[in-house]
Amino acid sequence: MPHIVVIGAGQAGAALVAKLRSSGFEGEITLIGAEDALPYQRPPLSKAYLLGELDEDRLWLRSAEYWAEQRITLKLGSPVTAIDPDQRTVTAGDEVLHYDELVLTTGSVPRRLPATIGGDLEGVYTVRTLADIDAMRAEFAPGRRLVVIGGGYIGLEAAAVGRKLGLDVSVVEMAPRILQRVAAPETSGYFRQLHVERGVQILENSALERLLGQGRVTAVRLQDGRELPADFVVTGVGILPATDLAQMAGAALDNGIRTDAKGRTSVPHIWAAGDCASFPLNGAQLRLESVGHAIDQAELVAGNILGADRDYIPKPWFWSDQYDCKLQIAGLNSGYDHVVVRPGANGAMSVWYYAGPQLLAVDAMNDPRAYMVGKRLIEAGKSADPALVADAETDLKTLIR
Picture 1 (cartoon, rainbow, N blue to C red):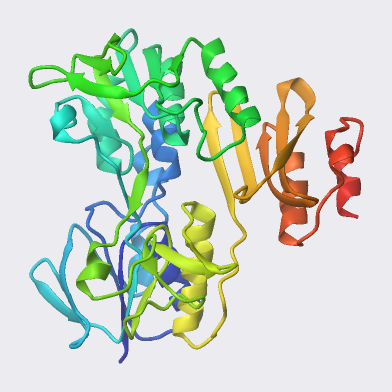
Picture 2 (picture 1 turned 180 degrees about the horizontal axis):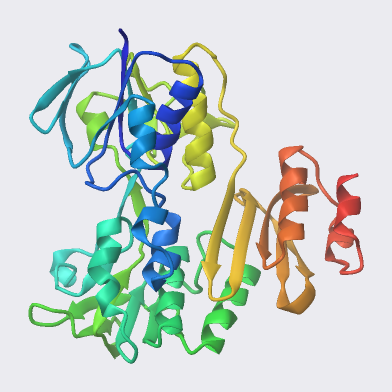
């Protein structure tokens, strides 16, 4: 009986094995995860779970009963230590598993501050796993001083939680503006104002020199000499694709685990999907980090393992929750040359990204209609007249007729 082994029990891995079963695969399926917890969703970790609004069992992607009913073997708390592509075996814990097809859905790992600048002090946290959040939750007590290193979405979400729980919060960003890598100045400005109005100190153009403390962090020193007192620090300075196992197996890397449009790596019978994988699009290898992408690509790979032979065409969408603001993003803004800002009701706003006449992406802040219209246009390969988009009197629904 054929055996499909999937390494990485996050969103992509869970979606892939579920799709295999729902598509009629009757062979053995093993899902291997390094963490002890049942496969769970990560986005709520830095939002509702950290706020204490969500219990752990509500993070689970599927119940414990589901995995048993579907005859999917979960091998949790079992980091993989070896892959032998010639023998088609995987070593996880003290067990050696033979596979017919192997899928790497290993996700990504957070960048960490080096120990040479205090990154190994107690009270310094990253936001990635359930264990990460459980370790830091007790730190979020009213009146304590939190310094967030990094003004991306993860850092800003942690800052929002801190302020909602009554902490004194500072965000340190070395770039000229928060969200500079991922958003237009207009979106950055919206979120800067959102945080400043709620009492967050935003320090842009501010490079970190080191963390201070004996054993435990007590302050953050910036390169201009300023020191920020800190009871604890949360770092959100980016993530890296988890490629160690792919490299061990001899798979080609290119901004992640390089795959073809079907999800196959350079090694026969080994596939990849999710945050860890880069795939061809418009002549380049693209890697996406989002729940929607992880599910879509994983399900496509599951189909291709079973013979579907389909190419992956992404339909990117993302979101972030900060205070009472829900940001929804459709499309990819890379290569834009101008934006159009559309005001919405009650402080809502959307930013529409164009390359020449072509609509590429939309950032919608508390504006679900702008998000849905933009998403439909982008997925259909259509655009919208920028003048009509900018006019608050335009009924957005007319743009998709």
